[in-house]
Image 1 (cartoon, rainbow, N blue to C red):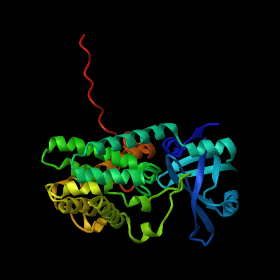
Image 2 (cartoon, helix red, strand yellow):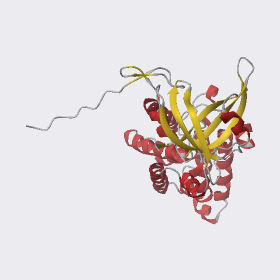
Image 3 (spheres, one colour):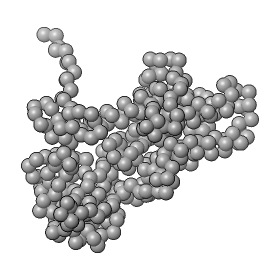
Image 4 (cartoon, helix red, strand yellow):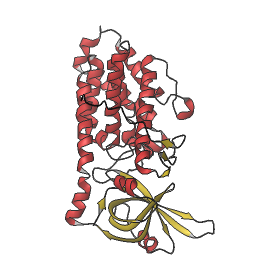
Amino acid sequence: MNFLTISALKQQAGEQPCRFVVDAELQSRAERQTKNGKPYLVLTFADASGSFALNAWSDAPLFEAASGLADGSVLRLDADWTQNSYGVNAMNLQWERLSGDALQAFYAGDPALAAIQQKAWDDIRAFCASIQDPRLAALVGRFLDDFGPRFRRAAAARRNHHARRGGLAEHVAQMMRAASALCGVYPYLNRDLILAGVLFHDCGKLWENQYPESGFAQSHSLYGEMLGHIPLGIELVNKLWHEVIESPIAQSWLTEEPPSDHVRLHLLHLIASHHGQHEFGSPTLPRTPEAFALHYIDNLDAKLEMVKDAYAESAEIAPGIHDRRFPLPANLVDPLPRYEPHPPA
């Protein structure tokens, strides 16, 4: 059998049907109706690499079977797969419930992705260890110690970019690499502050885009739905800050410059302004060099991840031109290859 991850399925499925097998966890189902009033189900499946939605029409065997499946069920989906601008489709679908060793192998996830995420975590810890401001160093250390496992499970989003278990760590690590490089180009940027801001900018997603200890179905929480990740992040950082400030080690910080409360305020501003505009959810606008830098680093990494996925998954509508993938603004064109100089004769 030709086994694929969901990410690989999206890369390989095209207009012509191809037989693939995908192991996936049922994340959720939603009841819908066609224009003619016929019921159907939208089933969302996920694995370590991503997710996809599959329509189960009322006259298909999957419709009746899915009605009896609990969320979190892991299925082996064997089908002739196609893909268009609306997503993936399955024809001649057969399925079975996974159990035993096959189920444990599924929960272990994709080894290649696991290695990428381990490297991301190692880089995050190394960047945090390089922070010299003792207030920020203590704060990031407290966060990683208290919330490390939860942080490593979270996604950066529900869709569009890094929308997978561990995606937040991938996103944060890449942003830290970019931020550190940018501080070499613009040496007046406060490197300690911007690295801490990168770590914390999406920390509210530990509640908004969280996964259980086992499995790949992204959960919903009342806190995430009713507050969103920016207010949650501000609340968490304030809580951790006051815990750190009240510790015995903080007595040596009373005479540090800049004053500790200014450090806290600037860090909170990075969280509050990182979406860049009010209409995109920021309660305030960027007002410092670090806030502008963080906003654009965040946006750049998200956009380039979307572009990478779009090249891999979208169909070519003409030679070198790829069908537009939301939310990118236009069709993509193949990038220009890098020049490789010829070796001397």
